[in-house]
Image (tube, rainbow, N blue to C red):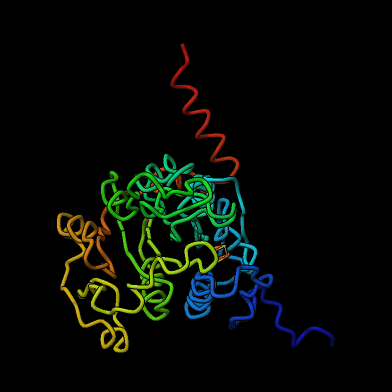
Amino acid sequence: MIGVESDWSSEPPPRYFTLEDYEGGEARWCPGCGDLAVLTAVKRICRDEQLPPEKVVCVSGIGCSSRFPHYMKTYGFHGLHGRALPVACGVRSRRPDLHVWVATGDGDCCSIGAAHWIHAVRYNMNLTVMLFNNEIYGLTKKQTSPTTPQGFATNTHPLGAVLPPLKPVSATLGFTNVSFVAQTVDWNIAHLYATLKKAHEHKGLSFVHILQRCPTFTPGVFDDLQSDPERILLLEHENGIPIDPAVARLYPKKLVHDPLDSNMARILADRVEELPLGLLYCDPDRPGYEEFTGRGIGMGVGEKLEFLNRELDRFTI
Ligand code: SF4
């Protein structure tokens, strides 16, 4: 008889996701752009963690790195300049089951989006925020950004950027309710991968500052960090970023740093002679706004009406 032996269960069959399952459009960044390394790392984490593509959302603002959602075959939202973070908070507030990755640049996050940056950190919703810092506005062809080195000639300051650059890590460490701040570089893929993976595992807003090469408009700004391993200070701790043996061999200068030590994190962030790589700060017990926005999710229509009536009755005169 037809169908008697069939499996009528509605459970979808188990799936295994390969890198191709996250492969979006062909990336149109310049050859050698550091954005490509970050894209590769995120795809690998999605594959290694077996995140269903329909459960992943990439949110961005405007800028070169903000083209990120186009290159992932997941859900995505390429938003307005500086507005990646409020959009991402909105997504998490009603869909806490989704993995939200935020791609934002130094212009997008630290200039027009700076107010959202402060408050998104304070809201501490479960987001993986990647700040691609190439120290320039690349999409608009070499304008001074908040992180452009002082004296660096740009199209808006041909005689050199006038002001000292904003320090995204130091700034974030000063925001209320900050729960995770890490720093990595696009040219060390093992460290980049491990940092983003740790950030993704964190429950709360994880802020990852990525030094990102822009060979077109800021060539050479990270050359000394790339060529001289002595300029890197590798942060080690059992609760920090897991260190690949090859990374440990490459960087001779190391420091055991407890990510709960916020005072030391601030001192490290301000170091100029070396760049600290790793997890500067992590407090997994910080409150998150999702504890509030998640209320009522899963309620049936009847329950919602009952709840609303009860609330409105409080105002009955
Ligand atoms: Fe990358 Fe710079 Fe080209 Fe933009 S301009 S895609 S940041 S290399």
